[in-house]
Amino acid sequence: MNSSLWTGIKLVLCKELTMGLRFKAAWASMFMFALTTLACVSLAMQGGQLEPKMAAALLWMIIFFASMVGADRGFADEDAAGTLMVLKLYGSAQPVLFGKMLYSFFLLAMLVLFIAPLFFVLMGAEAVFPGVFVLTLLLGVAGIAAAGTLLAALAVGARVKNGLFAVLMLPVILPVFLPAIFLTAEALGGGSLSLNYLGGMALYDGLLAVGASVLFDYLWYED
Amino acid sequence: MGAVLGGLTLAVVALVFFVVPPAEGLGYYVRLAFFHIPVAWAAVIAFLVSAFQGAKYLRSQEMAADAGSAAAARIGFAFVLLATISGAVFSKLTWGAYWNWDPRQTTIFVLLLIYGAYLTLRGAMPAGHRRAKTAAVYAMFSFLTVPFLVFILPRLYFSLHPSPVINGTGLAMDSVMLAVLLTALVDVTGIFYWLYRKQRTRILREEKE
Image (cartoon, rainbow over all chains, first blue to last red):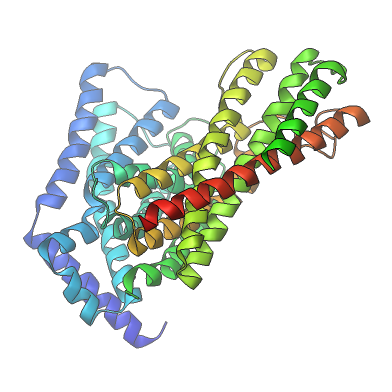
């Protein structure tokens, strides 16, 4: 990677972090959404335990929809604030894409760090393979960050925004989502581990990032 | 072209009902296969055409390519719905349940979601080059799922579905059946192409107005 690209990525990432810390609504809505959903199910269960497969599916549903609340803001907020044009003038496509992708990954990793311990406390689940559990979560949210950044840029021009992001996201992220649910269930004690799924997820994450990188140029530069 | 296709369709229907013998294990239910397989095939072809035309638009910025991509997606959506429904009925008749997330069912469902997402995205944007560009990027991006659907998904789940047709390893077909199936495939591909051209012209005309 050449140094100017890396510098650009770092600059965009720093900008995103500064903005994110200053304007906390995106974080707050995402975290509260995750907490509310988890609390709803936990309340309804009244202390009853879910089997690993169900628990894994629940955890990923929460992560997926919570990320839909937060991750689609990347470009829409800039568009609304009128700063997108400025970013287009000063930033070239790749640093902007990867800077925002890294920030999105960081945000989602924080979300997971917040919700996973609560999930164990409230659902009474137990990680039999904690290492695999953590790695699966990270690879899963990396996929959401990679695909989400491109799709957030796509959705900027749409007139109907509510729900559109989730609709666009699900088919694209399914190849990460399905193995992630399987692996999480296994890490929670639901059967023997199939570790090659981890490789598959990493590979698909890479594919999404490369695909996003190639296609983003078309979205970023006006003709 | 419409008249030829109509005639061919009638011929295929007649062949399916009067010539094709009942299949071993499936009986006369096999008749549904002559609808289900070609429709599913056309749904996949439409997906390829949509992504290909999307790529063509990104290279050339021609609105005709964008109209082609949209037309293929619209018709593909209709075909994928037919394939899903006929598949579910077939599944009920032979396996006992409408839906059990067999890998093929999952694949066709993901295709349905992609078409739905693509058309929703188009519907949410005003016509013009920006929509064309956005739609083309989504068509290409969603195409990344293909290796997963084709190579990895079948390993995640156990499948009852016969392996991809024509070679005859999954569904034991005699030569009459195979000939009728191939005719049906040609017929449905023709219908797809015919509808695709009509739709593309219509979209282009709408955008000019």
